Amino acid sequence: IAVAILLIGGNARSAEPLIANGGFEQGFVRPWGTGLYSENRPLWWNSGGCRSTAGIDETQAIEGAAALHIINPSPRAPQVYGTVAQRIRIEPNRPYRITIWARGLDLASAGAVTLVVDAAWRVRPVTLPAGTYSWTWLSGTFSLPTDYADIRILSEDAGEAWIDDVRIEPLDTLLQ
Image (cartoon, rainbow, N blue to C red; front, side, top):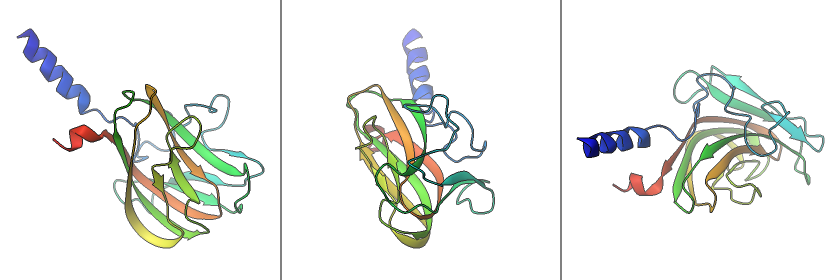
């Protein structure tokens, strides 16, 4: 019986989403705004004179009632960006898949908006394409040597983007 309880508990735990409020159904609220560099800052913050904003759009969601809408009038320049992050727990060196739905309006470049997962901001498994496009499903994979990932939405160039239904799952469970 103890083994059965452990097995059931293990399965129930693995069904919990790794990222909270990935569809922004609860609004643009915590645990967004957690992770490295987030302390004592607003949920969405800017650096280097960036004038970007982010908020909930209840008219453009791909799924559910809301999506995150990012508007960035600032052209790409070094250290000019707007961002938000959510720290999640992961298993070190385990592969994960991150998926999102994204929509773009006049995004000035590929990578104007990216999803970053590491503390150095080098591992970017999802990059939004340049241009204007309707809802598009994007995915990427990552593995980190740490027991956490900072899921960071980063806007580094002019344009508008909508992000919805951010999901992260261990890659090996997807193959079962």
